Length: 209
Image (tube, rainbow, N blue to C red; front, side, top):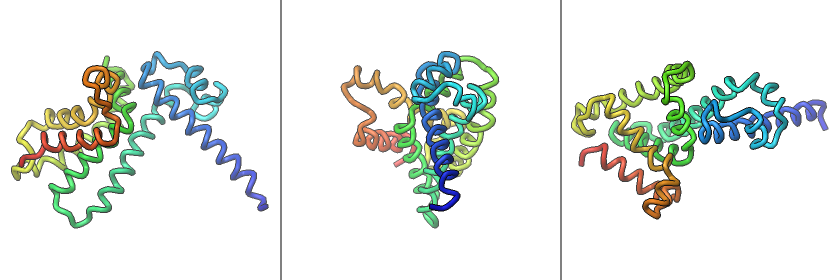
């Protein structure tokens, strides 16, 4: 056994604790909002002692920010992985793959859109931080990706603001409202085959034949 083994074990344990807290925070912030989710509830969901939240994150505000960043980082890694596989591929195919990946990510992480919807109830400081830190870069990247395809007649000619919300809304709403969808239609949108059907539907709506 090397002298560094105990330190590595402690680090692994601390990372596991942080990860469980972040996941619990995402679930509860998306279910109950920032105000409705207490650090005690988050600690109970994560199976840790409440003081560990202060130890690892300083407080609820920083925990919220790091939980949001975790989701955007996961999406960025997933997207970069797909784009790296598309080197040399035409822009239209790249855009289709990016949109499809966004739909799949939205299905696997409905907490992101639920949290955004919670914050959009009022124009508070958290919403401004969320927009400037994470959402505006996503908006700018989406517009940059789709604008030349609109000009080229590949993507439907829709004003950019409407196009962005059409894509993000269509990609996420069915998964955010999954309980309603199950009751209303009998369809479970989170089943893998339904996710792929929704991918095809969003692509058909956005791209011209």
